Length: 193
Image 1 (cartoon, one colour):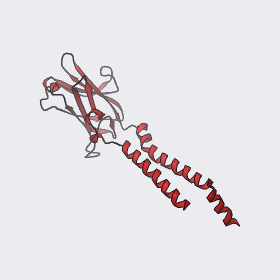
Image 2 (cartoon, one colour):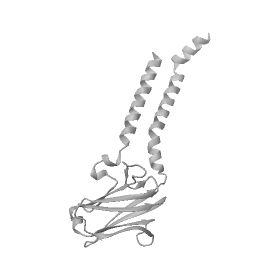
Image 3 (cartoon, one colour):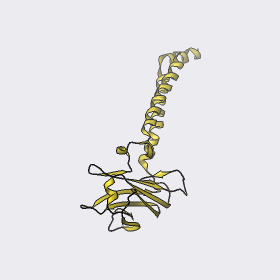
Image 4 (cartoon, helix red, strand yellow):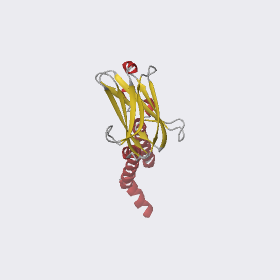
């Protein structure tokens, strides 16, 4: 009877932890526009969205700020705001964080994009980069995306490990309580006699 209760309690705890863990995970393409980390907003309406692709490594994968591997990377900027389609918009990718002081690795000169899509290709090595998107308006429109290429993201590792770690701690606590319960101790002492 006690073992059945312990198994039920452990299963319930595991189900709760699994539900919390699964709820924390969210894919890039399955979030609301306002919560998408690849969306940048200026003011009330001016928005752009960045997607990065590396089909040579993962044909169906698309990324934003965490690029998993080095190599050729296709950048696609969606000009969500209709007004941005009526002004020249360009892209500059720099190795580092400064648009002026750091090395430019890719430059797409400003031009009009009536379809709302800017495409660019670059080759990225391991390290930190920044994508600057500039619209030639009055005042100028600036967006930026930090990129981390083939770098360990300890926050993601921690998020992935926290669910199993909590489950392990709960099961350990449950096992400890079970071993310390008077019924188990009485059962052990009756087996020894």
